[in-house]
Image 1 (cartoon, rainbow, N blue to C red):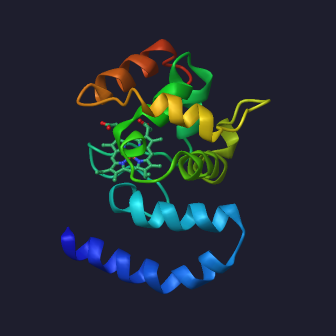
Image 2: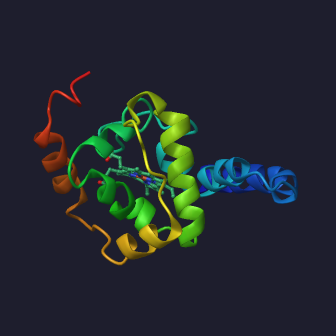
Length: 145
Ligand code: HEC
């Protein structure tokens, strides 16, 4: 695992000058994803084993369940990330639109740094999987395919 992380870091450093030179938020988010999320979620957010759920074609469904919007930022991998609130907001908006645009609710309101900052004050811990199951249980049909 640490070898994989080393490789990711080497790869990301190689890609960094291009991203740093760009004002493009999506390039910054793609890099943040690579450095901080891809190690567990894979490059494209597919499900990995029984532990890591798919984000691809799924993650935006949580926005249609009460409490889901909060969950997406309070989940430990996001809330405990070393990134600043602004970067997390951009990364979360990027993740939702690139990995699961088809489930974005109409009138989707982008996350702001302020919203992220206040949600992160209450991160989930070991209870994350229970909270996740509870949210899915609120609308099984929504998550069923
Ligand atoms: C150490 C591994 C790990 C890292 C690093 C990680 N995640 Fe996760 N992520 C998980 C696991 C496991 C879950 C399932 C919920 C739980 O048990 O925490 C999850 C759940 C999620 C969810 C909720 C989706 C769902 O179906 O439950 C989102 C959104 C998410 N991660 C985004 C991210 C982002 C963005 C990053 C990088 C900033 C990141 N994660 C970093 C392991 C990780």
